[in-house]
View 1: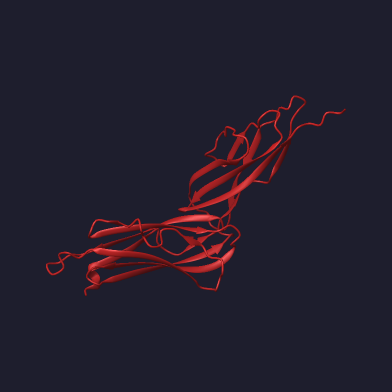
View 2: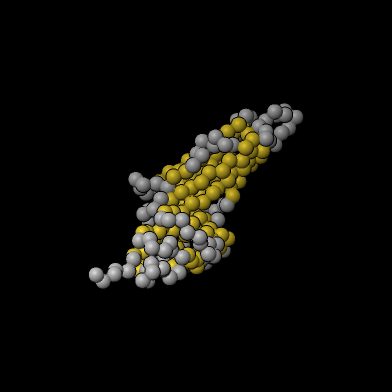
Length: 219
């Protein structure tokens, strides 16, 4: 079998370092070359495998590992998977292997090292806050202040604040690092928000809370 008749590429390519509570979408694509003796040669299968290099019991998770959603047009095929690093996983190294095979019997594989380190991208959604209403139960505007730093200065392509729980409020500047909202009047409760930032094709999420208390009236 002529191995040059098949290619396999990863996008993005190269080894990756990710913090905990982050995801990255990786696509493998393969081409086969048909000749007069292999006119029906096609990409017949694609698989992902993730193996620990250091015996870690808690691993990143990989969606669509069996490529059930494989997009196959015969001579070209691609399959995307989302690698998710769980919250609380701060160190470790894994090998992600993408494999493809053709009906001719040719097989190709590409490997990517996945390192986990929270120093590469350090995202904060800000400290928890507590607000107290005035005599009429009205609250000041709550400010949500995100911050991204670390050893890697990558390109930020998306920022989004979303509300996770609590009475529904309207977020201002939700697509910037600094958002704000006005808490519901006369309501002592807790709001939870999630900050999601995509940098260097890696999406990182962090959460913060805002607790509102009503002013105690002297009796």
